Length: 275
Image (tube, rainbow, N blue to C red; front, top):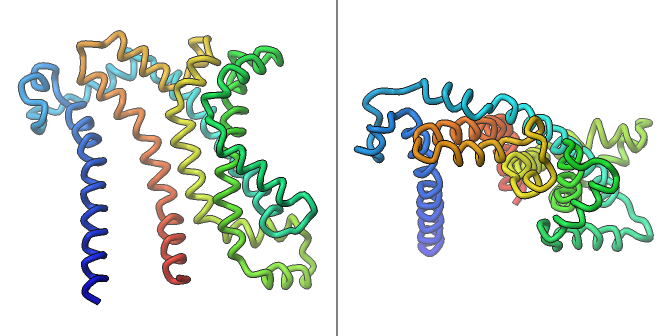
C-alpha cells in the first residue's frame, strides 16, 4: 500500500513538473505579445504594465496572416478529415474481419510507420511535379494523408479490436448491413480514439513546415508556418510582434484541443473503468 502511494505521488509530481515545463514558455510568449518593445527589453519576465492589443492587429496585417490562415485551415481540415475517415474505414475492416491477406495489410501499415517521413521528400517532389500537382494545395494534402494514415489505422484498429462481436451480431439480426453497422454503431463507439487521432493529425498538419517549403512556391498558397518564417525574417528586431503572430497561430490548436477534450476524457475514463 505504501509503495503504491509513493509511486502515485512520484507520478503526479512528474506530470506536474512536465506540465509546468510545457506551459511556462507558452504563457511567457502570450504575456510578452501584449508588451511594447521597450517594456519587453526592460522586463521580459514581468506582467505587462500596459496591454498593447494593437500588436496583434499589426502582426496580422504586416504578415498577411489572413491568406496564410486560410490556406492552412483548408489544407489542415481537408487532410485531417480525409485521413480520419479513411483510417476509420480501414480500421473497421482490419479489426473486425478475417481475410487471407490480413497480416500483410497490417504489415504494410506497420511499415508505413517505420519509414522516416522526410526521407520521402525528394520522391514526393518528383511525383508531384510529374503528375502536375506541384505548387497546389493537393501537393500537401495527399502526402499528409499518406503519411498519417498508418498511425491513424494503428490507433483506431487497436481501439476497435476491444469491441465485443455480439454488438455486430445483434445488428445483423436487426437487418443492418456492413456500412450501416460502421456508421451507426462502430463509429460512435470509436469517438474517443477518433478525437485522439484528429488532434494528432491537426497539430502535425497545422505546424508542418518542410514539405510546405519545398512543394509550395506561390505566395498566395503558402501555409502559416511559411508565412511566420517570412515575418520573423522581416521583423528580426520586433520580438513582441513576433510573439503576437505566434500566439495567433497557436489559437486554432488550442481551440481544436478544447473542442475534443470531452471525448478524450471520456475515452480515458472508460479505459480506467474497464481496467
